[in-house]
Image (cartoon, rainbow, N blue to C red; front, side, top):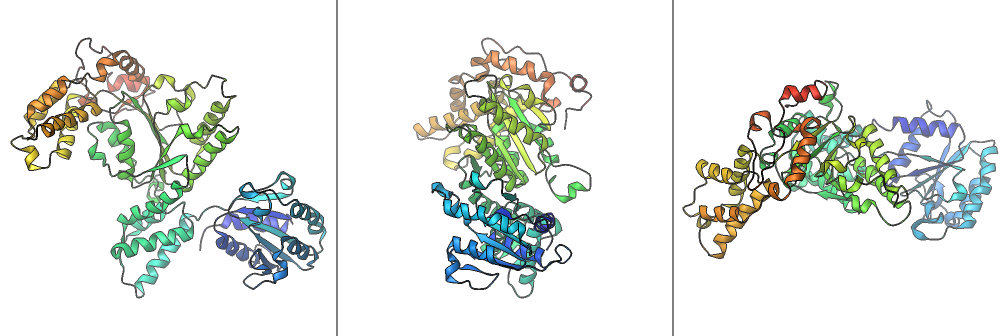
Length: 554
């Protein structure tokens, strides 16, 4: 099996250099032990033959795979045995973190003192001896921090998970009754979807996908994502958002949709043939209620990737130092289940007001951690950030290199309003008794679009819902007059927040790419009472010149 080559070389070098204490934090205990044994048995890595011992509180100290003696179940007696052993050996101690103060328990100072007393004997022993601590969590008291070396043991690589998948398919072909409908690219997508799971979790996910419908195909990516949801459910900072919203269910914004469609599958190996990196993400700003959040949900369904929403409010907890740790844990989690999509809704609320000193610099430190990760991340995590008040965002976040592109979502054009009306009517007007004689014709849609100039998508949806409530209240079929009444009772956002919309437009005019294509932006948008007067959208040539010669249509 491929993978873990760097880990093997690192472990071999640390063992040969006689590092006395190594600490591996992993949930995959058996996989870690298997890799360590393979290092010891590989003469190209370690020439000196060493006996591998394992210890647990239930089995005591014993050679790997054998039953231990009851007297060495005591950790102090096990450490005594290690000190007296005179031959080359590696001692793997399981779950010793319980003696280091795990789960708010007091640390066992006698065990800690014994470990420190054993240190010179390990260094001066004529025969090489190393102690490796393996536990699911990293707990290390201050007294031992200078004596231990922490070794990262990554989750299974793509090649390891692909190997497990191939083995299961091969076993099924030798006598199983599961239909396998996977080409090379489909296998790659399934294996990539399982990244972030342990080998045991990945094997369970593949087995579940096989038995649910008696076949294994690319549609079973959703089963893999369900296993990943189990990881996120244990996190209080990230939320796993399950969305069946298709990109076609979002009205308008064709420019942004095309940009996203062209980057589908860009995290697969096939994209590497073109020398393409995985996209970093997009910042979507604009008028509230115009579909920014819907895009985040729909891209998850289109790309078949898990969508994680980061709650910035939960990042900032009350305990000193815990906010920074929360951000680090959120980043580690989202990278662990990559490829994935990280959605930060209304990002300006989390990173605005950084110049203030009321939190002793916590906000600035968290912001710095996030910026560094955005700039340097190598894992395929696509960030979708939405913002209503772009002026509140710090300039560092908007610099090139953080996001691939900044899109501006304006008030819907006439064509987009027609699309939005049709989407919501098709979605809700299904019962023949409710529809009655009402026909969703082009003339009806055009008329409603003309009456809702300056309305955002969320307001159009509420107009459809309000019209249906009128018919429901009177227990009759829907009528065109219901929509007219709902429109007359709605004061659009473009009237109540005219100044804010004008300000956003002026900012985005040369700093962002319009989510609506040029051919649909020709409409001059006015509103009742005092119209929103903003500079008309510039031509592509104007914006291209202002942005360094870059094209703006996708």
